[in-house]
Image (cartoon, rainbow, N blue to C red; front, side):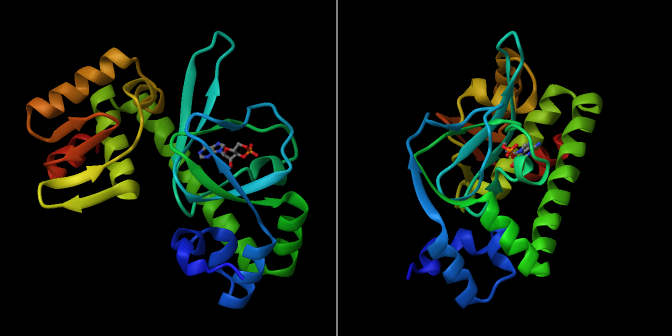
Length: 229
Ligand code: CMP
């Protein structure tokens, strides 16, 4: 039987967190493991969806594109996070494209298995609802920021969000290995690469952050979070 403690993030995923250890292990053994390499696309917006995924290791981006080819990133997901449930609960095509930002390991469960789990366990259903509600809350916030905040404010907020999920505190600051290019960061905040670069360079010149390739070190957490408010 697979050891769930080797996959600490998975235990916090909504499918698992309501189950006791025995049920969680049994669910884990019924899930299919998938590995994809950095840059690989798992599925595309518009595809038919028949599985839900939990990230075990690595990072993925969820994005949509406009008819003229511009891209928008909805979210960056890391260990313990779930995706692929919208086309299950609201049957229809995939609402976003999922692409690996780093080499990634996932667990997949068929939609039929999820329905079985949800109908057997109200606690699992509640956990899934909680996660969907959190996502809606976050999406509303992103929408409000697009209307009410300027680009530097949105960049600061995105860095804080990435930092709270992927940051590692070290002596010199919070190391956030987000693994995103500046183009992808721009797609995440809904602005041009030039404007986002300018905001990052400004934060760096003020000593709030240190810029590194596909990473940032937050040196002044308080000032950056104030800017993102
Ligand atoms: P599905 O539509 O099956 O495939 C794409 C997945 O992206 C979707 O399910 C959700 O799990 C996820 N997703 C869609 N929109 C958002 C969003 N705004 N924030 C986070 N995840 C999302």
